[in-house]
Image (tube, rainbow, N blue to C red):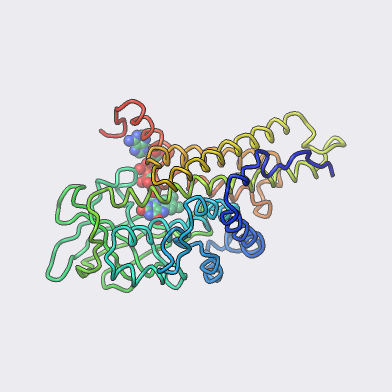
Length: 396
Ligand SMILES: Cc1cc2nc3c(=O)[nH]c(=O)nc-3n(C[C@H](O)[C@H](O)[C@H](O)COP(=O)(O)OP(=O)(O)OC[C@H]3O[C@@H](n4cnc5c(N)ncnc54)[C@H](O)[C@@H]3O)c2cc1C
């Protein structure tokens, strides 16, 4: 088989930009993904299940809430390390990264940033150790891109609140022990939005799984129903009010996606390159044809650019200076790049590319969801557009 003359995995020696500790964290997660996760993914993807049996190992790797303090059982690692964890996980599957993103960025982060001491002490160690699973309920059947229009209502009653409404497309919804539910208090506007910790088994709280997904099949997605659900006062997140609560959580998760998408792109690129070197047509490896080299060259270049954007974003995030617009740019463009690369990898692999065992179409299908969730590709263009022009195009 012909041999590459440069390291196709890291042409720009980007790994040298990270500390020894960050590289160690990355390598341990990536090794685990290759050894423990990839052998199971086909079976779970076909069955439409998440490999819950791997939860203790994931917790042992320290991937849940890795930037949070050690006193809660977390690693207190840098945001760059958090990014590299996401990159390594999504090398395996976007559903695996989604599970960890939700647990870390959308559940542990709001409890840590906006919760009471009692809420932190109770939930963070359980979530860090994988003994509890969390989900994040913002999207509703009638309100996706404009969550400020949400109809879920929390009515103040003696000792707490009574919640009524429904949430749509909730990752880990059926699995979760605790749901972070965003609701408007009374019949107020978006300024009245509050976060509530709703526990599994609470009377009036039920879930239903979406069963026929063609994307993110190894991730559980559910509807949540709240019918006169009583939530005690102490289960409300006390330290945030308004849309900035959920939006700051999304900013955390979008940051991880910007890195994760590059992990997926690296996997599909490497798979297509290997196939192109092995597969012969017209008496020579297909990677030797100019058209296929154009594809491989563009894929490799786009990966370098996307990884450098993620690295720079990590630096800014470590310094507490990354803006939502910077995060939005990186999420949108890196996911779009990864989707293009996965589809191109599929073409290089010809008919084999459509098979589950070749893995590239699984990644492409997954990325269709990643393109849409955590702010659609279009909405992220409009966020940058507003920043560039001062004109908000997404509002009516
Ligand atoms: C697999 C999966 C998992 C998810 N997990 C979660 C979760 O854990 N928690 C959660 O709360 N949500 C979750 N979501 C929901 C996700 O965030 C929403 O799907 C997303 O915000 C888009 O909302 P929507 O699907 O209602 O699309 P819509 O908002 O109806 O948008 C449909 C189309 O219209 C476009 N559009 C909308 N408004 C505008 C505008 N102003 N200008 C131009 N174009 C516009 C969009 O870009 C899109 O192309 C998940 C979704 C999926 C698919």
